[in-house]
Structure formats: C-alpha cells, structure tokens
Length: 330
Image 1 (tube, rainbow, N blue to C red):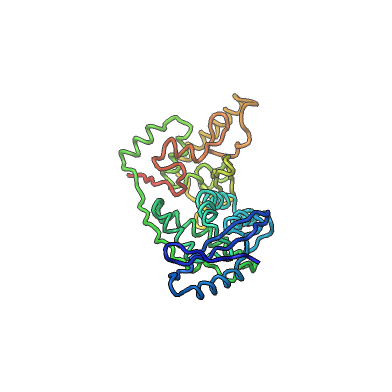
Image 2: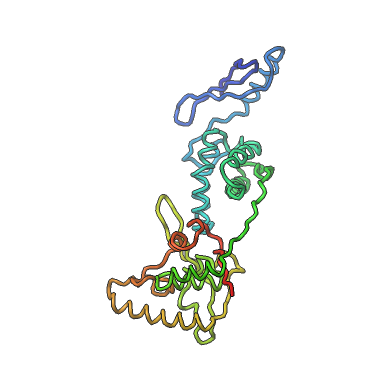
C-alpha cells in the first residue's frame, strides 16, 4: 500500500505519495490536484485514494521491461533490443539522440512508461525547439515513436502516446552549388593530392561522400565503360569511439545505380590503378592491404574516410551525410 496525504501549497491541494523503491529507499512524489483549498477537501481526498490505488513504484531498471519502470530506463533497455534489428549506423544515431537529450530529459521528469502521456512528449519537443532545428526534433520523434511502438507490440502499454503528438514541420533544404570559378579553384587546390580523384568523381557524378569513399575497383568495368554505385563507407561514433561501417548497399534503393565511365575518368582511373600497384611494391609490408579493393586510398593504402573529405575540402559540416552540393559548370 502506498501511503499518501494532502498538502496545501499556493492555495492548491497536492497529493503527496510516499513509497519504497526496489532497493528499499523511501521516496515521495508530489502531484497537484488542481483543486483550490476552500471547499474541496473531500474531492481532494477522493483523488488521493484514486492515485494511491493506481500508483506503481518505479521498478528495477535492470529488471525485465515493465510499464512501472521509468521511461528513461525503458529506453536504455529498448536500445539494446533494437541493436540487433537495425543497421549499425541507425543504432548509433538512436543511441546518440537518446543519450544526449531524450533519456536525460525524461529521467529528470521521473515519468514511468505506463504514465507517459502525449503531453509529456509534446513538452519535450517544445523545449528542444528552442535550441535545435525542427529536423532534429523529428529525429527525436522517430526514436521515441519506435521505442513506444515496441512497448505496444509487447503488451507493456495499450496505445502509443507518440501517435497523438504533433511533429514539427520539416525545415526546407536549399542546396548550394559551386560556380565555375569556384570549381576551378577547387580542382587547382586538390591537384596532385590524395583526394584529387575523390573530388573529381564527386563533382562530375554527384556522389555522396559515403559513395565515393566506398567505390571499389570491382565496381568499375573498363570493358563496358561503366561505374556501379553499390557500396558505401560511413563512420559512426559508438561509446566514444569512431567505427568504420562498410556496407554493400546505398542510402536508398534508388541510389544504387550504374553510371557511364567517361574517357577522361577511364584514363585517370587506369593510371591510378597502376599507381597503387607501384605503391604496394614500394611500401611492401608497410602497405595497408585491408583496403586494397578500394579506389580512394592514400599512398600507404589507408582508406580515405568520409569525415576527412568534409574537414579538408567540403565547406559543410563533417557530420553532414547528404549529397555534396557540387555541380560542374560548362
């Protein structure tokens, strides 16, 4: 039985519930009745009894998922469950979004999974919109909605409160393109460097950075003169460490495509292929053979990472994963 009593504060009746946690600690929870003190004692007492009957103390965060556990603790457990059901890049994004903002906010709020309401989630979104763009809040929503969808699926809750929340409108994206002079300046800047080929391919074919870094020699058909875009390389941060993710696929199904290998790139790639063979001979055991199937490697065979391109060439943020906004001007 959860103990309870009424407390007067600022002219309003509050219900104060006292209970023991799973580890034996005594805690209290205050909840406003919204009732003015004058003439409402009996109604307040009735609300208190109802709250006592419905209240379930938070359960062990390391125990099995339960609607009585804090929503923040449920998210921690759900992340581990989701890890085996989504791509590593997706899981890393979920974990970063959860650990940075979602879990701290709802842990501080102290709401359980069973008590979570749409109003709690909406308040979180409104607070975040004061510091981040709508698109980031949409990402928060995706995590919360999916976590709660799993709670409904496993009969922990009856309905998904995130279904009742209004998502912010997605902010418009406007791409920026280099002028002819800017493109020529860029080509001059990278000429002879280890990223020259990556920049040239990106500029001409409109590749994402993950696609150009993920290009393998097997994707180039020198007889049919084609380049197949079917492999990507991205980096994510997990538990404070950078992890390289190689994927036999593209960001979307429509992104998998076969492009014509124009003569100027055919000759450049053939020359690069011979150059890499020579580097392997010169470096011997020092050459990194792990990435010898890749086109975009340095003289020692090390793979050029996506973030390196962002930091050193592309003016945008190194965390930007969208298509590089570069266009050749005739």
